[in-house]
Image (cartoon, rainbow, N blue to C red; front, side, top):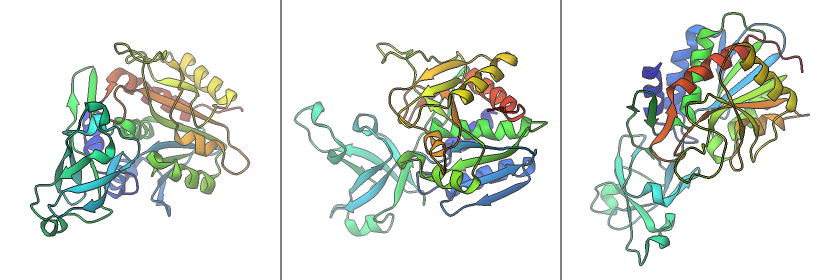
Length: 329
């Protein structure tokens, strides 16, 4: 599975520009589903037939990035964030555009480090003039973080673990499921990082009986971290709430029961800030029972997001058993 993780995290696919990662995921799941389609927002929607109720599983395939807003006379690029980014994690990092153009993020002279903002940053693509830069990039072009996957053994590090690790888990679960208890709609959603947009459209079209998002969540296990009862290596989480939703109590109970019945280590998650596709699913049409399985992740929205491989494997097990267990509601 580590080979799949490496390929999905390293593939280009900022929000609104998911074509490459969508094509990779299509090729991975094609032998294990009955139907596939792409909707108007670019969501990849795969159906694995099992009969009964409709279960929607959502893993967003977009990643954070930066969009070019201005090219100055010397060929330096100004940009706007696509998703949540901190200037402290961008400075000195490399980015790559869809056409392969590489840039380095630099900063203007500052009186003090505390004055560093996104407006003080620029991208240097090695051009010496506006005209040269315009042969490589244009206004509105989007770049993703450029960073390779690193296998540390038990821990895995890469850009775009948010949320490609969930995409990899959903792919593996589709391979593993033997007796689906539902018509399973596996949705690899677009534009989650800019407002849960893909999931909202997909859920409206599917109208599932149950929706579960698969995402990452923050941890409280680093030095002087914000207090949170989630740690790497203690299993995937069953979410209770985040900024986008309070998970449907019956769904949370169902997910916990599936974990306990199958001896799968898990954690409960209360996330104070941040949201997931489940927030959009839950509010679709007349309302849909919704929950979230998360993978604990350190350094979210940086170029070096870290997860625990055991959590990933237990996430595959939990998601597979959820697919095979009927939700009574």
